[in-house]
Amino acid sequence: MEKTIELNQSQAVNDITVTLESIELTATGMTVYAFGTLPGYTSPQGNLATSPFMRALAEDRVDGGVVKQAGSAAMQYLENGARFIWKRLDPIPRGAQELIFRIRLSFADKPEELLGPWEFKIPLE
Image (cartoon, rainbow, N blue to C red; front, side, top):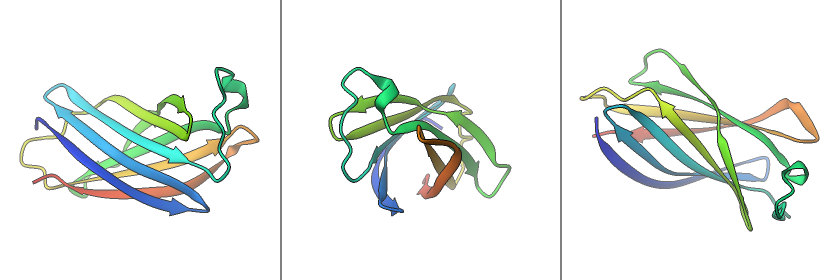
């Protein structure tokens, strides 16, 4: 399947808002873009050690099939939050109906504790 899906779907869990921005589907793989904001977030201004976000993990599932681990996202720290980017995920087969993308976050002060999930159901038709 090859297309770009603009979503901008937001969910809040425990005062943390995650927005699934877009998904790029190509024959060679999928890239997912999300954005996270916290109350009182301030940009780490080049010092990533002071960012509250430690990692963003995700998993995906197509048409109720096997859950696949998307791994940890690359992060871009911005003035108002952090952008999470998952690259080189498995391609979505032609004819697929629905993608479920689930995100969990951990923070620098409690890296072992995963928060969320933020679960997004994306129609692919």
